[in-house]
Amino acid sequence: MWETHKLYMSNSKIKGEITELKVLGILLSELRNENYDIYRPIIDIKGIDLIIRKLNKEKSKSYYLELQIKSRSSEAKNPYLFAGLKVEERDNYYFVFYTEINIKDNTEEKMWLVPSTKIKSVGKQNKKAGKNEGKYTINNCQKNCNEYEVEMNKLSEKIDEIFEKLSKDSMI
Image (cartoon, rainbow, N blue to C red; front, side, top):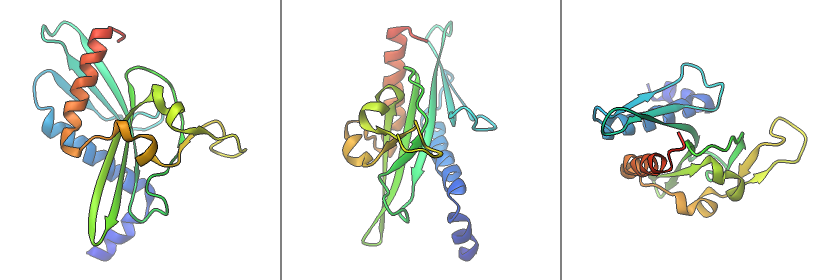
């Protein structure tokens, strides 16, 4: 059984799906009330992996948060590198960066929730011709995204804070 698991884990697309499901599971378990709905697009063609809808207290207005989830595993040469980021700056569009680091037989998980409006300031635009030309790379998320780090069990609290800000700004 473990051999099959290792085979599947070598595929980065599958690792990404596992991370998306992990984040979805955290949000589903913590945002359990009638004011939240979480949607997962069938196909990721717009750079959106999860959509969270929140109703205001009067249930008369909806607010939406779009999440793009990117992951790196402990096998990665640089687990804090996130490349090929296509950035559309919107107040309700966020990147979730997730990585696992093996330290002395323990796996440490780290997560950052970065607004799309801040990617250009924490990353660099790729100028080199190729598939990532014009896209952004964050070379060291641990250093460059430090202010956006979120503990796994605090993700829903951070999402609530974002919705609070969005509802005050009335941007969506």
